[in-house]
Length: 329
Ligand code: TXA
Ligand code: MG
Image 1 (spheres, rainbow, N blue to C red):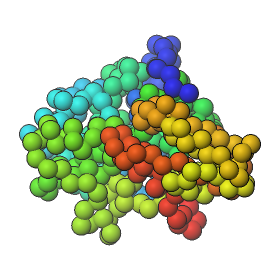
Image 2: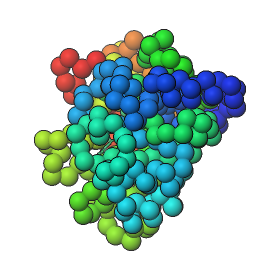
Image 3: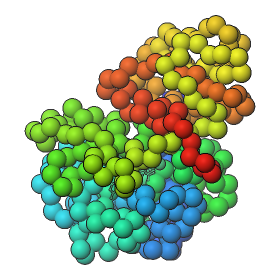
Image 4: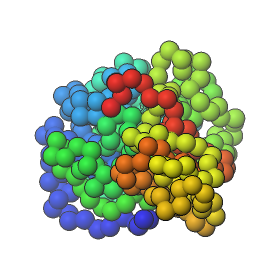
């Protein structure tokens, strides 16, 4: 299921950039997951993203740029942000800083917060698109709110059909999990969402201890998906730390946990038969979708070690397994 970025027609990318510049919505590949992009300086475009996703307005969007310097300029100058950007951009790290007063960004992008989440992706097609459009692009993952993030263009089309103006198809996302979100607001750096850039890597660059989780405000103010209990959810129930699947369930293995027992013959996938966490991350969302599409009641998932990228994989699995709020789509 893994595959590197594939080449894409330059004219299509140009058409997508023009569409974005005139207020349209374009889905595009990044190294993490596919994004649903709109002009971050246009309140109308940002509102359309929220509407398409069915996203609660209090959950702010990430702003994407091609250039490190231009991205940092949208925030108030922050030495720690500069150090992280130098080390990890372009790449799968989102940095939350105070918004610069003259950023020109739509207020809606930050959903009422005084901060902004900035990201410079490394995917060549994303970079080409962002360079051509020449302005900040707001892009949440291209899925309906609360559901599984897309790692292929086909996932995006399944989610939105023709309600998105253009879907740029560059094959499967190589990382397969959303970017690490680190907030530098108010004292200690804090990881709001784990991802491919790990706590240890961030601590090494900053030379200080980094907190993990939503912090004191988490109960009252959801500021990252980490604070919304149910997220990344398939239709089927998700069961964690299973060594086998019961009747009517699918099994999602990892390593040599093959999930025998009652569900022999039932739908099954293995995130990485050789127990490789990068391969597992890249396969996670596509396999959850594939097993969900078989119509099973539940997906039983094998244990994944809580180290390195496993921290981010397990966080997504726990959200997928969390109780669903009533009325969640
Ligand atoms: O890998 C990714 O980050 C993908 C690709 C498309 O770039 N994007 C993505 O966006 O995952 P999204 O919107 O699905 O998740 C980003 C999360 C938001 O849910 C939000 O809670 C958090 O980042 N966030 C955005 N702005 C924030 C802010 N100002 N303060 C705290 N958290 C923020
Ligand atoms: Mg998302």
